[in-house]
Length: 239
Image (cartoon, rainbow, N blue to C red; front, side, top):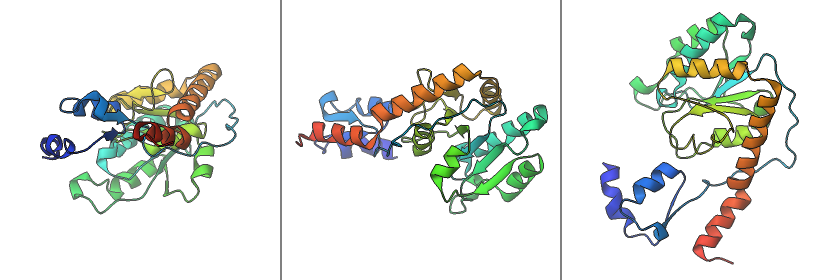
């Protein structure tokens, strides 16, 4: 319904900002290019010093999101059950982080039973991280299997803290992970996620390093607070 209203609502605006290329293409159907722009969300603070990461042999992988089905959490639970069965030495290295989210339709909520069954297979549920920097620095890989995002802060934060990123090939996620800066997989597909995790496990040290550096540089050059504010000022004519 909202998409039907957008042409009417947004036609009144002097300029429209979007956070991903997919939304920009949609808006271009009814707005001239000069009247809309893609910016890097709200921008994030980049660590002053890029974290020095040692190559992993047995990666620590974490999914961090609200625990609802639209974030792909159930696919993460199912795929990592298969991974833990095939690679039992990773028990204790597969992490789920985030709040249990009850203020949603019941059909969209990840149940306690689903999480408990996964824990019995060797997964670790840690709840909502209280110290994000410590959380990111303690994990090698951040996985976001979301069905769609505006622009994912979890990916931006993880990548800027030196984590290797893996996420779905959807708007708001693929805008961060592309051009050899991480691993993409198909949304709503446990099998595609399972194959992507196996790829992550088997990355050699040079591939790990390339992903980290490419991702960090992309985020720094496109999504830092300084770059985003600079983009807004330039478009709005603010000196």
